[in-house]
Each structure stands twice: as structure tokens, then as C-alpha cells.
Length: 254
View (spheres, rainbow, N blue to C red):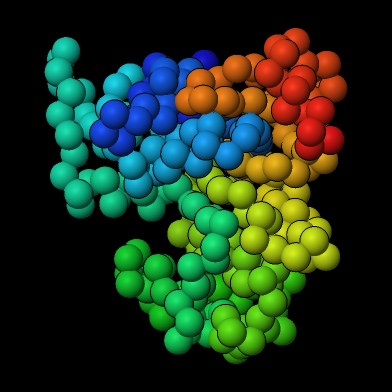
């Protein structure tokens, strides 16, 4: 049996006395789209950042493609990886944030080229061709020479997705990618994500877009107060939830 792409067992995370994750168990199989739902402050974004080791977990075990996040195991002991080793593994995980975090002094094309050239040492000419292909894929071939300030929020987010794809990740993480967008710009970003899902990209998506979760998600996970309250197929969780907390939340957002 192939290893799951993401496997979390009892993952905990705290900031001082505030425990944000209180023992999260979650498995995402290869090629699946997992949608994380829940109120603000439930731990969804923190968990996503732990997958990419932008946050260090304080308990439990978390693995991506069979490799422990931030650690290696020798016998019964865990050893923390050096920052260079963490960075090398992070290259396989693309992440798209709420805010686009594009370099304002670089064009869309240059933003997409930056990591392959500087981090992966890809030839500049080769990186330029691939960046152009990716911008075309997200519907922005005609905006390659535009700077972020010249693009709409939805266009900037699509550039951010192309930038993440430029490193050829095996896993894509999306942290509420449409929450900062005007409603009329959301559709174009979701269309790109649908295209990625159709191509078999493994994705973990923190979102309030329940329509997207129903249509594209393979699994839906409802989190609240740092734990997984309910999980299953989108139909099970969104249409016929069993937990009262899930029902209460969905009653306010649907």
C-alpha cells in the first residue's frame, strides 16, 4: 500500500499557555483534495503551517510522503533536522496564502521564475519558458510583464499559485486563498484549483467555500477548538453532519 501524502497523529501546538492544536489526527491520501472547515481560531491555518514546518509541532507525529516533518528517526529516538534539511524538504510542498506575498518589484513572470532560479538552480532560459507555461495555465499569459500593483487581487492570487507550482510540488497547501478577494474575483481562482484537482494534485485547502468543498473535495474535515470534530466525504460532513457543533456552524454559513 502506498504511504499517505499527509499523516498526522495526535499533533499538538501551543503558544505559551494557549494550546491551538490539541491532538489532531488526519490522513490525506495521494491525489486527494482535503478541505478543512471551521470557525476562525479553530486551528486550521496553524495545522496547515505545521505541515510545511512553518510552525514546529509540540507533540504527536506528522509526516509528509512518509517523511517526518522537521525530524528524522533513528531507532526509537527523534532528531530535529537542520534548517537546510527542512528547507530542502519544503521545496516539495507548495503553499498559497490568504495574502499573495508577491515580490512587488518583480513582474508576474519574474515572481514565478524566482524560486526555480535561486533555490533550484534552474537555467534562467528554462525557468522563463516554464514560468510562461504556468502563467498560461492560470490564464495570465497576457499579464506576464505586469507588476503586482497592476494586477487585481484574483490575478495576483493566480500568480501566487503559478509561483508555487514552479517548484513542481507533490503537495499543495491553500490557506483560505479566496478570503481576501472581492466576490467577483473568487471564481477564477477556484477554477485554477479545480484544474489542479482534476490533474491529480494532492491538496489540503483551508476554506469557507463550501460549494468548492462539495464539488471538488474528496474529504471534508470540520475543526473546532484545536481538534477534528467531524470528517468524512463532503456529502457526509456538509449535507448530513452528525455532530451538533458541525450542524451549528453550517447553519450559519450555508
